[in-house]
Each structure stands twice: as C-alpha cells, then as structure tokens.
Amino acid sequence: LDFETVSFIIPRWLGTRPFQALPFQFSCHTEDADGSLQHTGFLDLSGAAPMADFVEAVLAAVGRVGPILVWNRGFEAGVLRRLAADFPRRATELEAAADRMIDLLPIYREHYYHPDQRGSWSIKAVLPTVAPDLDYGDLAVSDGQAAQLAYQEAIAPGTPPERHTELREQLERYCELDSLAMVQLVRHWAP
Image (tube, rainbow, N blue to C red; front, top):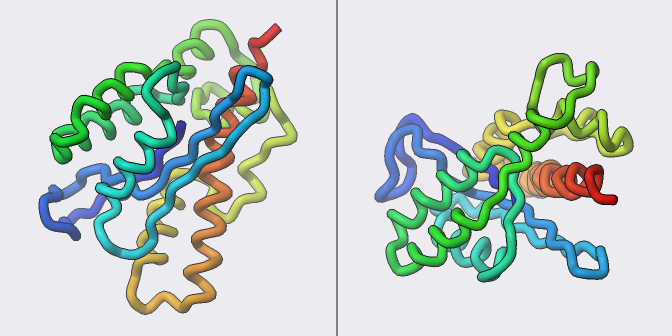
C-alpha cells in the first residue's frame, strides 16, 4: 500500500490545516494465495477535498484482515491516524488498518545493502538493486514531490483537459509502481 499526499501552506478545504499531509491517491497490490496480484487504486483530481472518498476506497481495498505492507510505516500509518481523527465514524477501522501495517524499510535496513543504493534507503534506491527491470527513471512523475506538483497542476482550474488526462496517467503509473515495488521487494526474500 502506498499513499500520495499534498500539503498546502494555505488550507484549501474546510477543516484542514496548513502543511497537513492530505491524501489524494493510493495504490494497493493484493497478493492472493496462488501468487496472483490484484491492483486497486484511487486518485481524485476533481479539486474537491478527496479525503472522505479516500477513506472509503482505502478501507475497501485493504479489507479487515491480513498484513498491510508499506515502506515507511510512520508516514502511512500517520496518514490513517489523522484521517481517523477527522472521520470519527470510520476511526475504528482506520486505526485497525494502521495497526496491521508492516514496515519493509527496517527489514531492508537491517538485512540488505547494495553499493548502488549509495547510502540511501529510499524505495527508489533499493528497488533497482533487487528488480532492475522496474525503473522510476522512465516516469514523468518519479517521486513524491513531483506527484504533489502534478496533483496541484491537475486540479488547477485553467489546466486543459488533455493535460489533466496526461497528469492522471502519470500519477497513476508512479503510485502503482511504488506498491508494485513493495511486491517485488517482498518476493526477493521469498524462497
């Protein structure tokens, strides 16, 4: 599971705060017992506050049981816990999902290193050392900061429809690669 968030200096939506990490996108790959993968994603580029729809979509994607693998649990669980405070009707489910998160980052920090990481533990540095066929270098949106900028451009009133469509595709490819990367990093340790 991977989230993309945006932080506004001046709050854009009622009930939000300056610099609050507001989720507008997620990508979730679910692996079935037979090893097959299912992908679920959410991306709201309407310009309206995306958080309520995000909550419903992410809870549907992760279900109620099983581990939820993330890279940097502090961030993803923090997003869910802040949403739990903002959406008390769904707080129990959001807190439960945050509690089910398993962080792949410390596992890799403790048990893996490749010189090509050049001291970085970013998923973008680790992934090419395990799955060189998966590459962020070919993406127009290739990191979280670029995702925030693409999101802000996409929701701007003057963005032409063609550009809006292009930004949607770029954001979807980027976030989907982040969750697929975690699948590959887990499979690296599988027997």
